[in-house]
Length: 560
Image 1: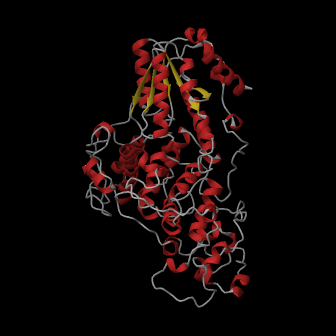
Image 2: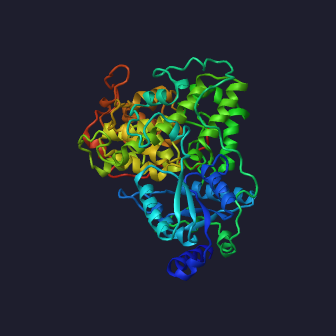
Image 3: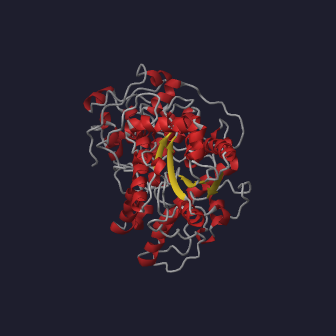
């Protein structure tokens, strides 16, 4: 098949030095988390270099088998939902490049082995600069191999809203603030405001002028600007991988669309731009984003752009320009500000990762202060499978397991519960999120988790999951959506089902829902109440299920 042929081709190239010598020098666009043709620093640079040198362009994407192995904690580094979204995004990029008269060569293997084998002496490889250790390790290996072949690796900065050179920090980010509000206010004075306040220029009127220091999107690529004249690679360019071509070490089934998912995510630039247009101009949802952003059900309570931003299917600058166009023509208010606010969080965590390096992956975080973590595997599995007995935690974890997505409100609560209430090693949670989240971004994921565990220099935010449940899901709609065992439980008890008596449990058919794994007294609501019903909690309740059970089937649940 095409996968086997491609693997043989690259092995031959690496082992047959004569064949390597015959390859022509090219300008290679090594695409990674920048899977788009609009506002692409890498593709623009390659277009410039090919015009200057007369050499062929060679856009390449490589599926690295290391990304499809199991982590040290046992999770697939790239789980099925994320893998499918990635596959769709790569194939979409190939289609879009073909429309420009170019193409995308898709390969499978270690990039530092596969890619240099395609390049003749004197080639240039252009790629987006990354900031975290695994990516940087691959880059070091790539540089060594390229240098031996007389070729070079060149970087472009392109993942953030603000270009690194425009931020008021040293290049290594060593002087960047560790507190988001301080970071935001230093990077962009126009967005400067105290915590939980909105700048004066976002007060419900049109905003014609802005002096924000965001560089404009790069011009669209012209057809023919990435010329390819590589007859020796014509067969390889025909390769369009399917699910079975992904380099898993073990059988992994392709994910199925879940009937209760918040929305159906399709990878690729086409879907990304369509979603951006939908949220800003087709529906005007952006104008009410601030008021609805803490929702948990349905497709429209948030922009849902995160999966496409994570893979670079849409650039943050394109999002910014669309928001600015909306502010000019419609309104600039607290909601439009908050979308820009969220984009700056992505920049913050990218800078945070660049500054602190591997500390964001370590057990003690950036503080370096030793902390004893609970290694109880049973507790972790209760959390991971949505069997903790705390409805808000369980509903969110079941949504994640079933769909690859979870709301921002949910993420804050389940992370706080695992790290600060259960005391389980927070890296287990970050690792599982890396596997499951369709919008996984290394800096944002691990930065958020190390923060949730209280291991940064900022304040520790512990979430009371019972109070949060009552605040953000008052009528229990979200809980009933994902917890079929509780669908008949009345509002009075839906957030605290442990208060049900044995007779109530039978009446409301809630007997299969697990008891709380932690003492409910850890989560007082407005007034600490004595339970009038139900049994007192004991430590045995944490193990009452007799082991971790799979959550009930919710595959037929439709969005209300």
